[in-house]
Amino acid sequence: MKLVSIVVPAFNEEANIARMFSRLTEELEPLPYRYEIMFINDGSRDNTLQEILKLAEKHPSVKYISLTRNFGKESAILAGLSRIKGDAAILMDSDLQHPPQMIGEMIAGFEEGFHQVVAKRSRSGESKMRSWLSSAYYKLVNSITDVDFVDGEGDFRLLSRKAINSILKLSESNRFSKGLFSWIGLSKKIICYDNVVRNEGTSKWSFGSLVNYGIDGIISFNLKPLRVCFYTGFLVLFLSIIYIIWTFYQIMQNGNSAPGYFTTITAILFLGGIQLLSLGVIGEYIGRIYNETKQRPNFLIDVSNVDEYDELR
Ligand code: UDP
Ligand code: MG
Image 1 (cartoon, protein in one colour):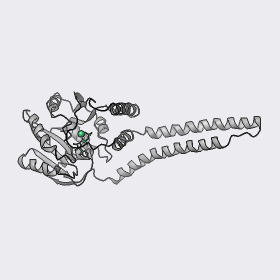
Image 2 (cartoon, helix red, strand yellow):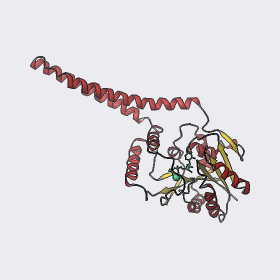
Image 3 (cartoon, helix red, strand yellow):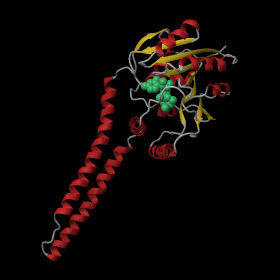
Image 4 (cartoon, helix red, strand yellow):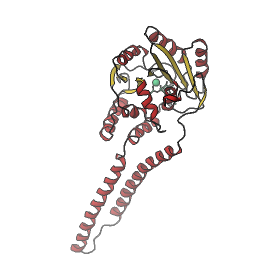
């Protein structure tokens, strides 16, 4: 019988672990599959780990990895993927915002032979502003990047063993998983579910982290922002040459009437702005190069009840 691994990152989710487990088993038991549930404790500061240990003691299907500190969801998922043994993996949030009743449909997609089965979320129950902002963002990103980002397609997805191994081969430390899932290619099926509102604990996303995430999405997957700097510089140079010629002509015609303060200050501010912006963009790339060259591991494991599964890497 095939094995399906559920990968569940958890950061300060003590109130959700037990419920998540019972909902998962409810869905998994009837399936003609063996299953393992891999919880990754991402440096929680509450009793998340204790909750997981309690389950692991009673149920052999519960596997866990506890990271040495909070490494972020992307790293937690990677840690999970590196140690599961399933023929397929399903990535799910621990706050039940990814409805477990979708598991059956995902497995059906897997049986049909798809390597990725993506559960796509509708944006119901979200503020108008937020859904408008995100759809505008996706339009922007898709117009400038080469990989496809789709609104509502998140981490909630099934990956075949081939897809898991492909993801594990990508060793970069700046992981923008949405982009990576798209980058590996392979056949993909999309199924839909309604947005669910979180009922316990709080979301770890602040407005600032969403903005950072947005910038990551643009920078991680292409060099076009650098090109924008280049073209802007070119355009400004071109315009300023025209302006110089025109002013020179004016001076020749009317004697010395070169305008002073206003033009000087606008030119300085305008150019200063563009230069700082360009430096910022370049800096973003250099920062990433710096991070990648350190070649630090994406996560460190503190305790776990599963062995290394390195031969799959
Ligand atoms: N999570 C994690 N590490 C983090 C932040 C979040 O493992 O640093 C987990 C969290 O426990 C949850 C999932 O990632 O299972 C999604 O987090 P959250 O619900 O805060 O995000 P949202 O649903 O608001 O996008
Ligand atoms: Mg959530």
